[in-house]
Length: 268
Ligand SMILES: [Zn+2]
Ligand SMILES: [Zn+2]
Image 1 (cartoon, rainbow, N blue to C red):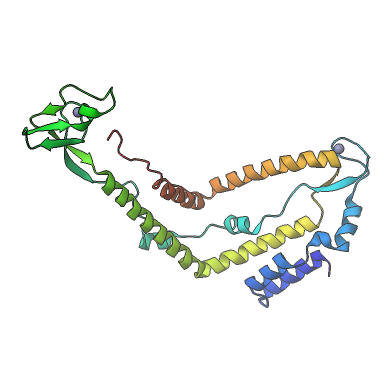
Image 2 (tube, rainbow, N blue to C red):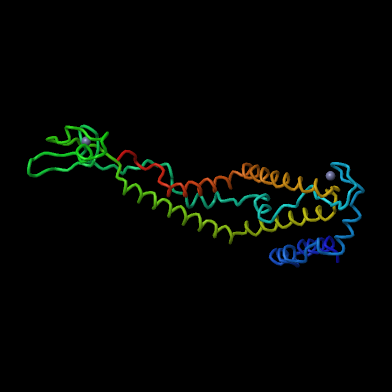
């Protein structure tokens, strides 16, 4: 069987139900590579033109360039439909990352510069601002001692860090549980089957050599670079088109952001 016949055979058994999705995946993805077969070499020479279609050079070696690539397995899983997590989200809502945090604590602060680095002096029965007394030259102020401090509501940095850590752990646990639940759902199995059939369909098109052209070596090298750029742009577009995935990635980015100290109180 040549690679194309092999693919048709796998598809037939998959549709007939005599081959499982797992079994078909193994056959499709771990079988012999089509381009290592004599069949491939024959097809190649059949489709190789007499000259480079870009610059017209007939100079050998001429190569066959595929102008279209079949979708990869990972991308196929996304393309056939992202997991439908609505039912799961309803039962296990993600922590609200924007909820107002009331972590205020009332601290004595310097009435002149607002610093909370103040302490009471028992002997002289007054208060002293540490920053005003011995901070950086531009922070010092002559009236660093005062009878009473001001009291202000400030965010407690320790409590805020702890709060972020709790949200992050809650989020990660939910996210992991959701993914595991989805993997065991009938929908995941359906998703895999549809992705596999898409892969097979696209591999058939690839093996038909319909989307090929003849190029000289230098032109082929240049187009490879262009191809990689196009691939990256297409990936970005796909992620835009699938809001569920981008939402998930958004959450992941946010969860990462929780660790970078964004939103830390400043000026203390
Ligand atoms: Zn050329
Ligand atoms: Zn001060």
